[in-house]
Length: 157
Image 1 (cartoon, rainbow, N blue to C red):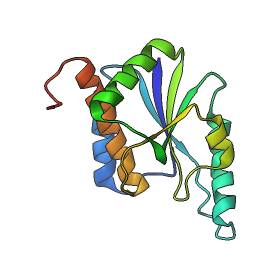
Image 2: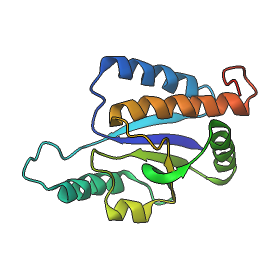
Image 3: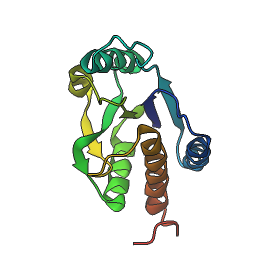
Image 4: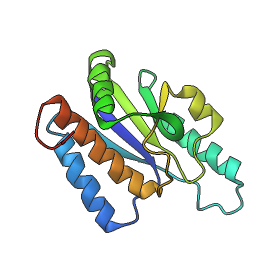
């Protein structure tokens, strides 16, 4: 199984990119991992928020494969502890045949079509964070999940 992180738009801060790259490299020790950047719709100021979500959603949907198990990182999703998230990853590694795809949407979230395509939704916090920062938080939590599964000392309960 391969884990993919789809993100709308580029990460704009070098210090976040450095952290994301570091955790991505660490995750790669446990399973194939890839970040895929999806085109955003911010260049068109004439679009409403809903039109922007639809445009970005179409870009996400065009990138997904039919067999992908899709998990949206969304504020309305189910919250999990790090240990619960590691158990989720372990289960998906046994049941997802090809790609487990996590998606971070644009500034206005996901279109209804993307929500319909998703298999489930996870929230990383009740707080709101910039999308660039969520990329770093997610990659760190994914790395943490693998260290928990492998009984490594990174996570301290």
